[in-house]
Image (cartoon, rainbow, N blue to C red; front, side, top):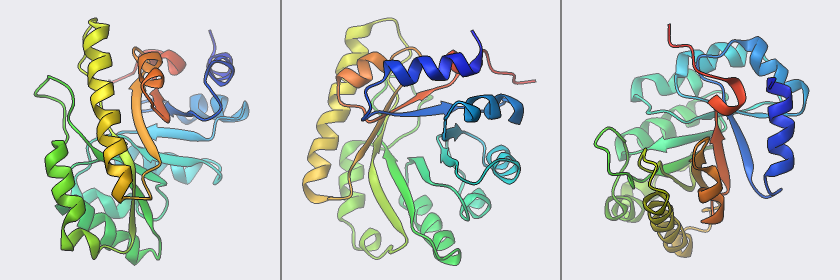
Length: 219
């Protein structure tokens, strides 16, 4: 199935309240434009350099989401245009995002990444660490960022009940965080293999890559 057909399929499948992030990492601009031509406007990338070069080439009504782990020294390259940074997992990174947002006279929306998966390879903070961060005076002094919610990745497993438990846990954290943070609106969870479970458990945005664009090209 072609990219355009896949986008149309997801547009029909997903409830209107759910944002579809087309994860386009490693894919050429021509592939992204095929999705764009049928109305896709949110693209997710995991490398700052790649996202920046695509941003320069593509129409300016696109929302660019950084979904990968971010190194502080790369923030300045995406600060002029990035719409949402999903994987914020330290105060150090938030301070750098705030600094670069201020340099560009912008407010940058961020999600705090919470580690819900069993794998050591997954990034993220514990919920207690996140609460501590959100309550800190340093965080409260950052005026050019907005914490828009949470992001998490479930364990890569075929055990759907485990995935469901992990997503439920993240939704519980989200609901708790919302009480003291009115800007909490987004819960980014769910990918090609588990987005249905994520939606059932309160996700507001799903990150779909290989099912739209095909297998990634890491050469």
